[in-house]
Amino acid sequence: MKTFNTWNALVKKRNALSEGGNCGFKMKQLPFMGVICTVMLFIVYRTTNYQYHETQEYQLPSSKLKGLPRGIMHAQSDLELKPLWSRSSSRSKVNVTTNKNLLAMPVGIKQKENVDDVVQKFFAANFSIILFHYDGNVDGWWDLDWGDKAIHIVAHNQTKWWFAKRFLHPDIVSIYDYIFLWDEDLGVENFDPRRYLEIVKSEGLEISQPALHPNSTEIHHRITIRARMKKFHRRVYDLRGKTKCSNVSEGPPCSGFVEGMAPVFSRSAWYCAWHLIQNDLVHGWGVDMKLGYCAQGERSKKVGVVDSEYIFHKGIQSLGGSGHATPRTTVMRPGTSGFDLRAEIRRQSTWELKVFKERWNQAIEEDKNWVDPFNSSHYTHSRLPELPPEPATFNYDRNPAINIALDKATSLKQKERELEAKEAELRKREEEVKKKEEALARAGVFLDVKNWPPFFPVIHLDIANEIPDYLQRMLYIAFATFLGLALCLFWNILAVSIAAIKFGGPDSGVPGAYFGWYRPLYRACRKDSAFRFGWFFIFYTMHICFCIYALIAPPLYFKGLSFPGIMSAMIAMSRNAFVGIFYFVGFGLFCAETALSIWVFQRVYRYFRGVGKAADARRSAAATGRAMAAMS
Image (cartoon, rainbow, N blue to C red; front, side):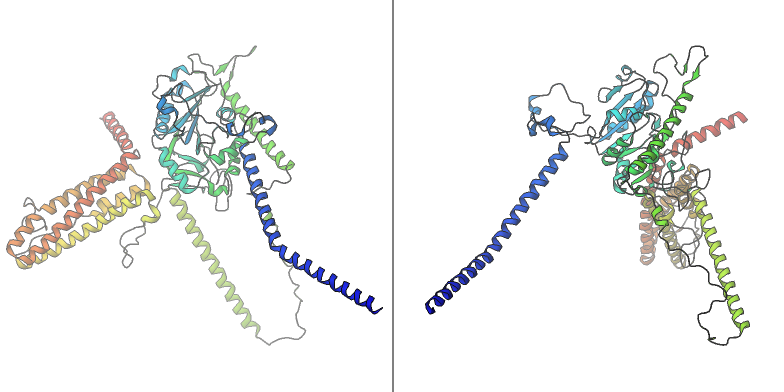
């Protein structure tokens, strides 16, 4: 029996050792299994990622493409023209698209001259051009220099949105960074595509348009009018008319809005906008109010109007007519005397606007998962309800706290109420004054409050807030020439005074440079006034002539040592070296003043000619001359 028990003990010991060994073996396997799991997870991730990218690249069902090897498939296209043949040396070169932006326009032969002006500017900026001929006349465009370089698509009496929906599919235009979908009746004398795109890219605008000249025809919304003092703007403040745009106004047409005559889309924005355009609603009414949903973010930041590069909308009604000599604006019906085709088009557009609104509202009701990103109504219900008023007999304690004289407490409360009322009235008046100042500023009326120099204000100076960014450097240097003139004249007085003490008393004088040319230039840049520019040129020319006269100091009118010019400096140096040094320093100051003044004159004149003010001045002068001739 003892032997049997000993044998059982040995067996149990062996089993225990065996189990302990297996456990140790399992513990040693854990790091190895962890490495295997990590490798498997990495392989699954890379496989899934590869499949995702392949699915994104090839949107067509694989069953329809299984007959082709994957490397031969090209899922994208473009609107670039290709030659029928090429030299052997250039065949092996990689095909690189040079045009990264696209201009698409519906055109008719009647607007050929205006379209030519537009296309020439865009061709110079390396744009691809596609023209949609709604009048069926293509042969009349081949005589232009760029006629064979543009793409021409013909469909009789079709609209811009009809063409865009059918020929500007996002997959076709995906190589272009920006798509300009413009009307044909736009004047581009003050527009440069390169500078426009620089502003759009720097400000992150996904949807934009150039501002409209204030004299443009058919301006429907105030936000599209050019703001002269800005480079671009994203919203407008206007309390006139039916649509009130104030500080609390959000959404179109106060912010996040562009009109349909000259929209510019980024690649991502056009991908969304193309899907927004309805295939059967060809006039596009109502689409402009919803374009902000395609801004790839907050529409109040991603949608804007560029003011420094602006256009003139001529408002020519040409669609519905023909490019041929026979007019087709009046159509005869059996048993009728005819009807106005433009009126019929407007009725159709109004009906399409109604249908588009109904489709939008229906789509919102049907898509339960869609959330309006610009609807802030969910914030209005987050406030807690107000507590009910306490009854007059309510008391927190049965025992009175302190004995206070009622007349004193009443008088203190009354004074407190009076002070609060006065404070509220002052705040109200301050807000009214601020609103009036803002309204005057928007209307182009500025209050010249004296604020410079700070320790003793004698003139008005606020270049950073009142002058457009692109004119500030020029005006700062002009102001430096104004201060330089003051320094030169001060040094002139100092030098002449020293000479008077040493040699005798010459006369001296100070011109009114501030009122003569600096203030007119300041106001001209602030209000964009051709008259004030002309006033500046007259007096600034006199200022430059004065500086030249002063640095030479010839003995023509002012005799003696009235000016520290080179001739006076040489005379003073021959008499007294100390006085001569002062005169030579004055000569150097007048040289620097003259050089800076000539630079300012050139910059102001280039700006004046560049923005068209010279043409306005010539037209105004011609009109005045004709009026004087008629009166005589």
